[in-house]
Image 1 (cartoon, helix red, strand yellow):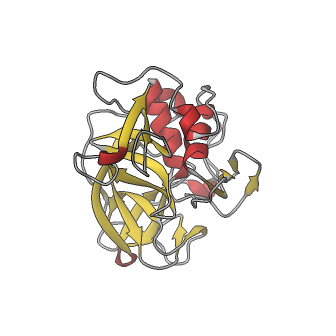
Image 2 (cartoon, rainbow, N blue to C red):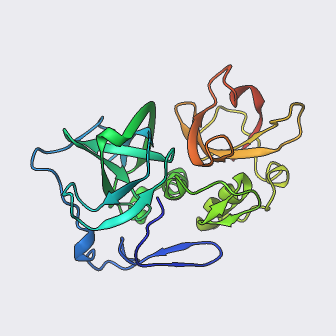
Length: 253
């Protein structure tokens, strides 16, 4: 999610002052996670200490995200109607969602519709170095863009298109890709042994073999992309027979 307070914009990256600092210094007091008295529970355990199971949801109205379940706690960000979120935990009244600073924010459950699309995302607060392999780093970075608006030819966290999203995610882990999806689709090794988390996906949305869209595979037949249909970075399926599954023409690693 894009965070509202304490930020500066530049061409490629949103700097967050109220989130996990780059050094090993403690978190600022306002971002220490506050839990409900009736302990929220993780939706499903994962056999990886650095990943957690979540579900995709969409908000049905503009709603503030707060640092705790308390109604007057500070606001981190305001979601727009229809925006996608990753729900990590829940109590009787609130969902805890993944924020861009790798921690959680809280929103009332009544304003969220779960789409029942399972995803695996970095555990809130897990240090980047603890993630281990390249695929975990890719997913970690990709999910910091969730909900960023789709903007044709955009290239920043204020708004970006599909190829800029893939390019910027891979740039963050030290891999430089071309700006356009058709050029990206010629970089790297073709995937021939089954998709793995972190693979780049390329689609011919107008038929044929001409690449016109791209995204990043996150496992379980799901991928994350800057979507024109959803108007933001969100998660969709490439299952056999699905809208995107029928248009997938190549994957690169």
